[in-house]
Structure formats: C-alpha cells, structure tokens
Image (cartoon, rainbow, N blue to C red; front, side):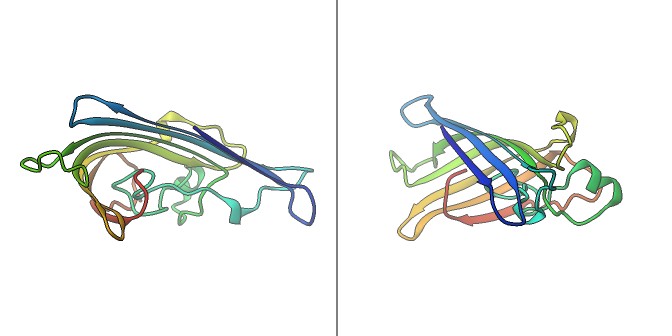
Length: 178
C-alpha cells in the first residue's frame, strides 16, 4: 500500500492532491502468480483558485490502461468536444494480471508470460468518477527481468472504448511491473 499527498500553501498556485495505491501478488500455484493493482488519485484547487493544469493526472498505456496510447485517455467533457487529452484532476486505475513461466522454461522466473485486464480513466476538476466513462482492455504479454531492468511487451485489445480514443495494440516498456 502506498499513499502520497502534496499541498501547495504559498505562491500563486494553491492546490491539494493525493494518491492511494494498493498492489498485491497472490501465489496461485508454485509457478503461477496473480497480481492486482488499484490506484485512485485526486487533486483540487484551494483558497478559491482552480487546480493547475500542469498537475493533471494522465491514463492510457503501459502502467495504467494498456491498449490505449500513453497518456491519451480523455475526460468526459474533453471527449464531448474531441479535444486532445490534457489529463484531469482525478484518475482511477485498476489492473489484474496472471503471470506464468513460459512453456518449457522450467522454474526460470526471469522470463514470464502474463495475461491481464485493465480499466481506468481520468476526470476533470469537480467531475465525479463515473464507472461508465472508464476504458478497459485485456491482453497478453511477455515480461523479462533483464540485466538492464524489467522489460515488458504487451499486446492489448480494448473492451470498452469511445470514438476518438487512440488505440495502441502493441506496447513496450523498460522499467516497473504495473
């Protein structure tokens, strides 16, 4: 579990923002592992000031909702006017994974395949989180803990998407797991 908070109390910008995240790995068998990730983030302007746009949260891509271009998910109000994604003052992200060694790989845990289901979205300041506005996807991938760090290749397909969403079926990442 992780929680972070940021509070701007001086200067021309006044805002409060925070994130709560829960990650858990579950052993399903000696070789298969299940994983879940849930993250909720929100920010708001304080002292009557609006929330600064450069502090917005973004979703889409590896690390949030795979199958959508990195940082491309829009809020409900942005989608109605077909604007480019500028993020939002709040975000929700839900991920599930099943990890397993590659067939014939024995007990090697550095090279694994995974299947996943993701859901998430971003929302404007003052806009409540609406489950019907969440995008979702499913897919498969390969994860390798290499000498340069974790490498992940994912192939995703959207379950729920909207007109104007930028779909990206293949994604590659060097770095973290979720």
